[in-house]
Length: 479
Image (cartoon, rainbow, N blue to C red; front, side, top):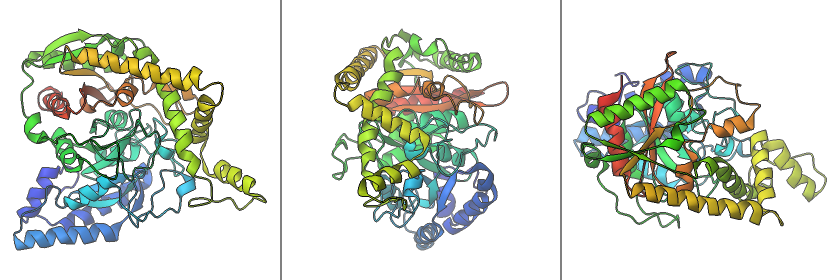
């Protein structure tokens, strides 16, 4: 059976109908990974014993004719910022090169309880800090659609593995666009749920008020299935919401006829590549053609989103990454004579350039005399951004925009220009700052064949409408 075209539903039914076995799917997946990963570099660590044991359990259920769980036998990968019991977890950093966690991230545990087979851990920008997956301590990931280009970041390995057919689905994390932007660049579906919808317990923290866990998949339906499995309150995460979890598959099947969709003018201005603009606008026109009502809206504080994000995110990163001191776990410098030297040298030798940059920016923003001028002001602008979206959602049920201003760029093209790299997140950081759900779904290609993504943003805990619009794009609008 061809693992490169399987969906969650087709995987489960093939095992139930005994057309294949979970063990065979695992073997086929690892064969493909070992053949293609040396070039793409999407996987950092494989856990073959764990995967095979889970596959055998699913096959035993199928052999007895027992009902199969919703993700039975589905081969998946996990971004390496989520801890996995007994499996190396590095966060893409040298500082955690040998870290073996003693417990599982809640999202991972829920996937395995639902029958998913975890193949291994995915490459990513170090501590999820990046937009191109060039910041990993273990080398860049290459985009399977064009191996001279980046896959996006920070969940580049997760997106690339799905695009290359090395996994049916993967998990990523999104702090400023790190699920949606790589999904756009690699031509897959990437869903970021509402903040608090999926537990963050076991997610290695970058910016705690911004971090989300979500799936990267081949279809909107697969994203809906995975969201339902992972969503729900977790007592281990104080920010986990007790909101009811709907049947997303059922909800997304509703037509978009009569649904009011907002189009913000601020997302179609300077910096948007003409081919991206044309593809997104064509898709919006087609949505209108199948009955959606298109409504112009304004999000006037959008121009402040990137600087606001890079103050808040770096400040939280500065605090979160203080725990990596060479004492309790992780890398420890051997070139130190005093305790202070050991702290300093361990962090200097093991953190990459981008992580150091963000720690320094965040420490500065939080320092005495600058806190009010930077961090406090950024939080006030964050409130204004939330107000913009609240006012827009009084008029519309969802908002549609480009996911990224460009298609995938060349490896190395922006590596020496941090500001240009940060601006690649201009259409995605707003949703993280406000905590609303968003999804990227393929909506076309450039003249050179590079994927283009359309982004759908929704109200808090209204993933149903986000998935509904994305499903309409997927079903009716792809060329």
